[in-house]
Length: 360
Image 1 (cartoon, rainbow, N blue to C red):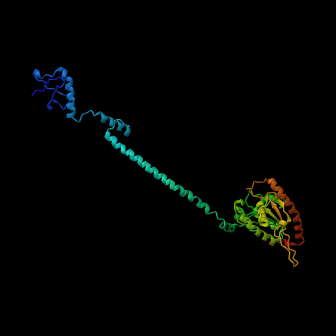
Image 2: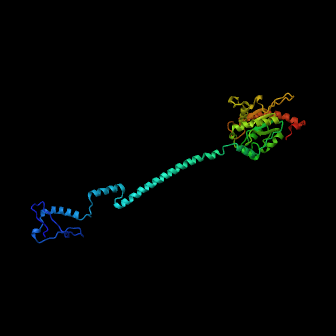
């Protein structure tokens, strides 16, 4: 059987190559040579031979090493979109792509859970924070317990020359039971500087003042606090009738209110309104504002005109509204009056008037 058939037209000459002519191991093409001169392939037919050969090779061996053009473009697009590496195979690219997608979704789920947890935990913290602040707010229970813990006792014998009225005991005063016990308090210094006491007494001499100088001590509020500003107006106003009753019963000659806030509370209760700025003054007040006044009756009892009121400055070391010199000027006025009245009291005691000055 001849290998090449000549056709009448040169352009339509075709060559058929049997399968045995292909060497599959080496991938090269070998054409068997024949001795017949009629079977030789013309030189000008080489181009058409290669074209037919390529077509036959493409259809006969589908597993060619060169991929089609359209497939290569798809693979390059997949490579650029899914995986930045150039050396990995398409299978590895497809396997590596889903985990990245799942990891991103898991991280998004985790973030959403964390946000939800933080959003739910935030209101709980804000709502729970005011609760412990509201629990110690009511002051109805604290005065009774703290007042019972205070060891300070009133020293109010009858017919005192001067009754000193403080706002309330401090913490150290409530613990020790001594008036104005804190070292920063100027009370004992001002008593000595003004001449009310000839020496500077320590707080432990609180209960000796009536015996030595006919001077007593009490407070308008019994509840001890660190600062007098921690007291409410309600507590201050409630202590005014109690103070009035103490003065009415013991009848001291004068009452010294140690602090502006005490006089403001007395004014509110007596007058029914707050004191104006131009109405306030330190020192002696009008006789119409005497405390403990007792009206006379028709049975011959002339009553009692009450104790005069002297408003002194606060002696607390926390109050910095006035200088020490300004405080001394106010207390010096009271000291001069106390020295004059003490002479009268000492003469009475020398004449045997111990019944009126005896300390209970």
